[in-house]
Image (cartoon, rainbow, N blue to C red; front, side):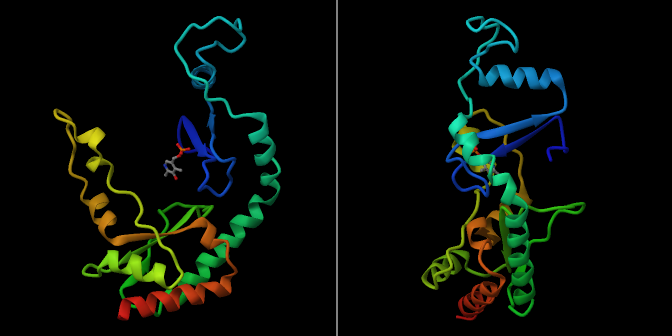
Length: 204
Ligand SMILES: *Cc1c(COP(=O)(O)O)cnc(C)c1O
């Protein structure tokens, strides 16, 4: 866990597979990074320093003990839940092999394990995604449009900001839909219902 860079970030916000309503966790391998993160989350205190000594500016971003009490026992069932989501995804991938105009977005090369926070499906060019989203919701399978490209956010397009073109992100934003993790917790047999609904909607 968290072995990809100087710091790994986990969110326990309400939509996540492990949630405490809000909050998160940062893991890091470097003591200096740790101390700076700790300080930023603890109103600028220094680790081991005086309680009312504030060498830097920080915020109160502490996870509460009540949140930790919700999260810690979750670790005991996390593996089982990840397996459950993977079984559903594998079943859906098999089912969707027979459905035209939609493919499962492959996992990045080198992925060794996937907690399956989301399953992303790519619709063929020319498919009306808004129609698919509305029709799938009507079929009782709510899909998600996912994120708009970051470069389209007003915060980044303010005058003077330089936004590089991101054709890959823009294409994904037009064609990709998400199944959220809560849906992936269903029994693998339910994958057939999802594929059936998609087949119906895509051939409508
Ligand atoms: C959940 C999520 C976030 C937001 O996390 P917060 O804890 O709400 O800040 C950001 N990026 C991705 C990819 C996420 O899944």
